[in-house]
Length: 222
Image (cartoon, rainbow, N blue to C red; front, side):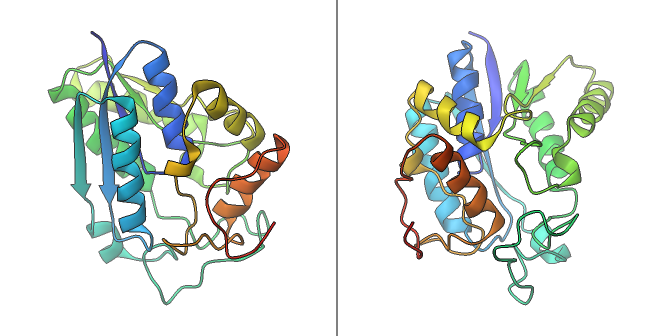
């Protein structure tokens, strides 16, 4: 069987991207990163549920706490406030973690080469995202070229959601039977989602666009 390495954060986008890989006939090697983010424990819990539902053949949880040591972002530094109800108001929100996807893809490439995976799937979203520079298709293509040069492999980097709206992502999740109750998007809380950070707002947009109710609990009633 062909194998694909899937970077799974525990969020909705990466769960859908991994499910697409599964639907395309790949056996899944699941990869998750703990990097000192505020909702780290909840995200890891969701990762385990997603990995179980996909019947993965192998899984890795990587300690990337050096990202928190570097700091400079609201996801790992509690002294920096999570922006609320400000989606699209800044070109680079405080929640941007410097070159996070570059770091993740580099580590993923090492594992993919050892585990003989032919593709790496990641849940990047550019159209309905927060404007992070490492969520652009140009970035992904450049990283793919660099990794293949550095490994001597022909790995295919795939971001099947990158051009989709959140409405389309939620619709795809339902088509594939992804249990979105087992995913988490909130940047701030790991128990009850805040409903006001960029990630919550984008997630809610997707459910609203499909006339569906998000199965997770929010502090604010919608």
